[in-house]
Length: 473
Image (cartoon, rainbow, N blue to C red):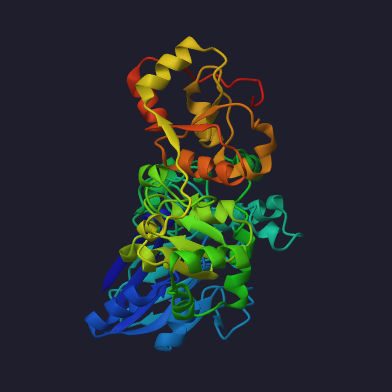
């Protein structure tokens, strides 16, 4: 028996490869399915099943492509109604993978079709449970996402279902079961997920707040609904892609592999209203970039931020990237449903420079120099673009919060005739924010190099955990 967790950090997503006696089951694969096929080929095995725990909101699953390429059967839990050929399991139905048995356990709550898969080994012992977004390490799946697709599924109704699923289907299982969830810390599908990506069910019964047996249903519902922030705008669109189907990833890649000269790139941007995404790291971008380009670096949660900030999945996209990062860039866009990459700048930003095209830059200031200014000028305009939870934990005294997540909706609060110093935690998100603002005509923006971490390290700025009652600006 082989169980392999395939974890993708930028999406905080875990897929699973299970092999026994030359047969393979894959659970919740990402859209780029080659790694699963390569693993099976190496093992001399055949992929028999692709199990989906639910219709995912935060990524486009690879179940359809994997089935088309291997002949594997797609399996969903009860009530699922996909628009393509798939097997809808009954609650309690079992599937054989070599000498292993996988049992579907219907656990509605995160979504109505949510299903966990219980694994029994060759000796007949239950050894693991693949919980999807029903149960995370330290948390449970948020029950407010399905209502963005089906309005009558209120968050209260789903939370009630989730309580019943956890109490009647999950908690009675053995403490020594290994829990394998679909996500870890950093995913927007929960609010208190641990950095750990596996644990025993017994530990979760002891330490996971949502499994506290003393919670009444009413208390449980209140607890899990408190503190939820609006999900990224691409979530409902990804759900629909996972239900209805999507373009083959090979076609998406082929379309994106269109190498464009500087002139052709400029013409394509003007003629198609394409969004230029520059995936280089923040500090490289700051030294020179194409005017109106948005910097979302591959080194961070690239796909999640694209999905959060770009409302239309069909938006034409042009890429500025190093050649060895091109496939990764297009693939990571496709993982969250952005299939309309129409080309890239051949040989990267250097091509643009050599063509003598207009170039923009971002001014920056070191943390120590900023600290001096901050202490000298009480009215200094500072934008903290971290998440509200980060800001609430600690922030510069007197500085208000404008989370990057909601920048597009709150841009009018920023005055064009003022100079703003922008910081996040470490510099990744502040450069995204600055690039968006500059593309909208804001010019007086200065990046605080190293962000809040560098500012705190100077020990020269006043920091508080008191949440200012004032609004931005």
